[in-house]
Image 1 (tube, rainbow, N blue to C red):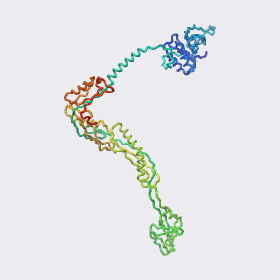
Image 2: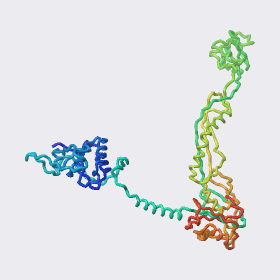
Image 3: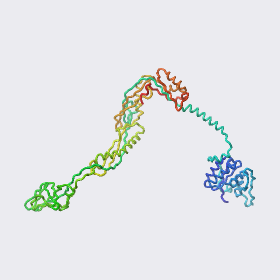
Image 4: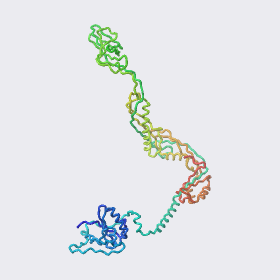
Length: 531
């Protein structure tokens, strides 16, 4: 028996989009067969069959339809599908053929031709009813179909319940917005008395945060290095260098020794080049000799001479005393201008490296601080360098290893300001409180690489009769702005000079009904004491 197409059982409540999804999911199947019950919702109109045909063609699949309902058989044939009246007919390939049947007229059921007993359609059992897999119809996801293809077959939808639901949602959203969205900022300017004090705090690693006059710090350092190659630009005049070497004196006299002073001049008779001895010496006879260093009288490359060319002693009348150079004299060089490393070359190379390294060091310090306030030990990263060359060396190019380093002291800015504020509060009169935003700024000095630091402050604020902020919020919540202002102006034991109320994001005839949505600040009439 040949293997037939995949069987797909259609549930009565499935939509056409479910069948399209199932076609798409069976990517490995060339043909599928839908077993359709009589009242299947998805296939009740010619449009549904045309849609299914269009998607089947786009996926490259051949579709069969098995249905005992004549009308569904006719719709299948009209759409271009193969139709079968039942599983038995499908199993033996007995299709329904009713060309020309109207899609709107009922079609009589077509029975398969009678088969001889030997070839009668076998009963459909798990082992004989098609070797192809049977797939049931679980709920499927809906795939969007073009609206132009579905609109014609859909009955008019009743939108009234949706409009009512939308109106209810909008109403409750409006109520929630009125209750929870608005906020109010209330500034109460009162006449207060100025107070100030002097505060000095010491910071150090390991200090206790609960102490009144000290606070903990962290010592942080960062370093970045880079090799820099640069060109030397310095110029230096180099004098002519005289040639040098050695000469040997010999004495063949049997009776006399020769005493030779320092500075004795010898020369090469062939060229006239002259050389002076660099130390005094003596030569005994009759076979004595002495070797002495000599330097050309005149500097320059011209003083260089080959071996065995120096043969004359100036002023010598003794035929027994002779001189010779067994090796060439060299090292003589003419005067020239040399390129050397100067300080400005080093400074330029260090600065160029700093343009790259200094920002990295600053970023490293900030990263290590992890959000803490930083007090740098130096105003900027400091530089250092090392090289095999030094200033004044003769060279065309040079290489430096430049290092930029910075140290800083990190500490909790909020903790320091809180200690300064606590010191100011000690100056309050009993029953009084500070107005909003007292000045808690401070100066940092003596920041050291070991993490120690000194903080000096002169905090300033204004004191007024003690007022309960939560109590004031509850006192004005839900009231109109004018009523709330009147209540605040009427506070006892406090001279209120001005009340300013701002509402966000929009103004309402009343203040928020929740105290958490109201911010109240008490300020002195001259304004805030500081930041």
